[in-house]
Length: 293
Ligand code: SAM
Image 1 (cartoon, helix red, strand yellow):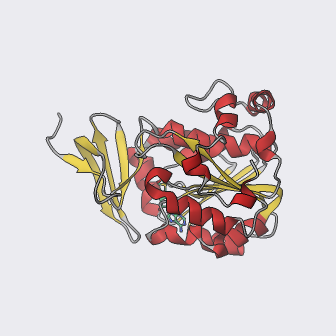
Image 2 (image 1 turned 60 degrees about the vertical axis):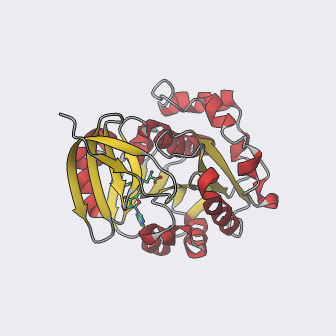
């Protein structure tokens, strides 16, 4: 039974998307944010935090596959992976799809997001919540990286909200300096950097900050239908400048042995390599020297 009520995203004051609601499933004001989960007519179940669309069942594969498979296959031997945010469980599931991953630690600040995602979006995290290689910690990502030992992780995946409110600390010098410290010599960190057509400053400022701590700073793109405004950028900061140079056939071989090939709906070896070819309106947001693609 469809209601006649709409949920409007409030990310941009002058422009936005809306969803016709079939059924509201949860509405919780947590200690950190306003959480709404509803069944939509068009995109399956949807999670909204503080009025901003976080995930829909229909298009989550685009973002989650690109945020996870690109850094792990570019690295090629990532045993230990740190995930910050990602309370819906989608990144954890994709990371644990990689046969070679020995440990995945996920640090999410809001336990209510995890609880509601398990209850109302069970497909997103799937069995990953019970995988013995996974560890889910409810805590602030900045505190975790400050306390973690040197060179503890091969890759850090930051799937956070935008740099406002609780997510702001994850876009600071302090956060990136600690990320560099806790990564191994070929380590890298990737994070959501917004939709540059509407949020160019997010990519520009974040990249300038990371260029202070990482020799290779760039970005790659994915077309996520419900992150409106064109390409979504995923920020890239690596200690090894050669990680983006692997050919599509090399990436295909790695995906085969990782158990990823043939399991994806957006990511392919060619999409992986091509995603680093940025249109000028996006490339110009990157620090010139450090970009070095
Ligand atoms: N893919 C979505 C996007 O790009 O907008 C993000 C999805 S995920 C649900 C975002 C998660 O980051 C939220 O659950 C939020 O609670 C978490 N988060 C925000 N700030 C955090 C912090 N400082 N430490 C850990 N998790 C944080």
